[in-house]
Image (spheres, rainbow, N blue to C red):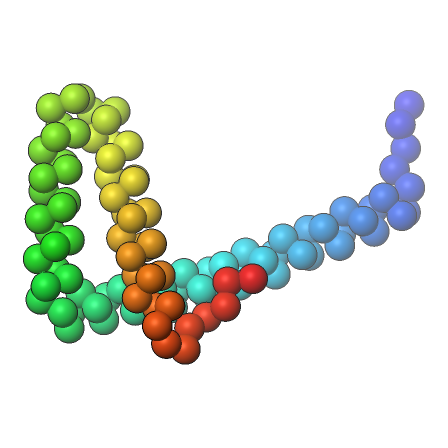
Length: 98
């Protein structure tokens, strides 16, 4: 029969506490990134035009391949938009992704 020592429990507690802190920080960073992306969307017509053009072209191609390809493409597209926003954020005072 296995037993869990107090040092093991302490290690698990420390690990869980660190995960909670990291997730909280990630949530804050995503919120800042989201607000910046929304501000870029509202303030830059060229950004909107490029995003919409890429979205509809890619969605049409993925839809021809089927529902799984469409879903996968949407996930990839959202990630690309976030990466683009991160590039934009790289030019000023930004959150530090630690």
